[in-house]
Picture 1 (spheres, rainbow, N blue to C red):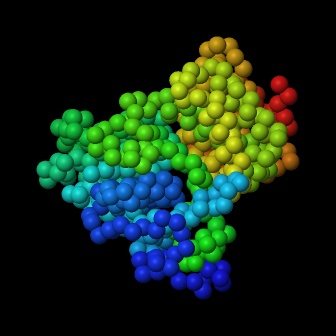
Picture 2: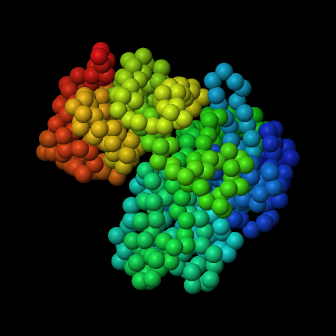
Picture 3: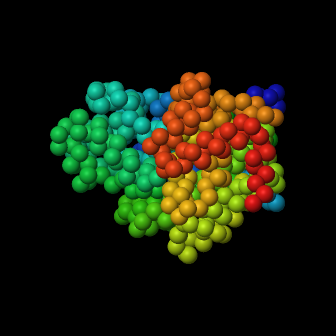
Length: 465
């Protein structure tokens, strides 16, 4: 913490009247929370927390119990502040906008706290941001379903306890960039549920809604410089602050208990599939491409990569490759959405690092690229650009050396295995990385792309075609 920041009082209920921010929370925060959220990182503060804050401002009692399953950092950031935090919105060409959010009633850490929140009689909505790898079941949860550690396992046990107590089941909404996230989460919960009680899966299927959601807001990791700026603007220290863009969206499968959220901009639709495809293919996929290509070219942030003409050209042509073969409803204006995504990547106010966006590529890339790759292969169309992106991920995760740059280590569930397989050669690494995730016909193309990348480095991104 800098000296200037350290001399200021910290944001809290007592100091809130001194905060220099728009839309200060003026609502009652003493009611029992209706929402339990698992995975209380920066994204949920900038997304769900803001929607809930606006619900509370308009008279809906949507307070949140926040739960961190892995780590106590959110607790340390927010508990001393009575769970108030600020959101700083940065957008090119306009003045930054700062607001204080009060929709979080409490933050707790650990499995016991999660079960307490999930089984609270007042909990009506359960939301999760656990990232792609958070949907993986711990084998121990299947062996000992009464002592779960994963989010799906905890949900299964909590639902069994609610059923036994005669409590109404909550709506369970996943808020991650995962294909059919609600459907996937339900399947994972059911796997554990059948180990708990034979009749529990049927009860869950009949009574517990798991709507699919498509969420969108870019929220980079907060730096000390960000915290200093917030402190200067707010006049108070806020260690739980988040920085984001003005754009935000939440599209979800319609359900009667979610209808009030439409008042604050949540879109309730019959089918989220086209919205999900549009985002995965035209925003998340290009975002990953820019991150990995940025690493290859030696850039630290997405904004820096988006300022590199050669990379922008490469990613723009990759987007054209997507638009050439996918069919999305005209009402979703896919070409406009894609162009706006590229503009958003250029936001210099968001220090989104290539390493952060490139994390967990083994889980993200198949969802973001595999469908389009499969369609193009089926039609006999070129997939070289997609192969280059995947090769760049493999090079970073496996630790291959490239000419002209030193790739930073990436956080990835498969990183250790890829590094171990590297000694057996490129064919082995690529085969293992793509096995079961991409069309088999893609393996040879990625093999060639990785060899080209190791030989030429960032030169492969010039892409004159």
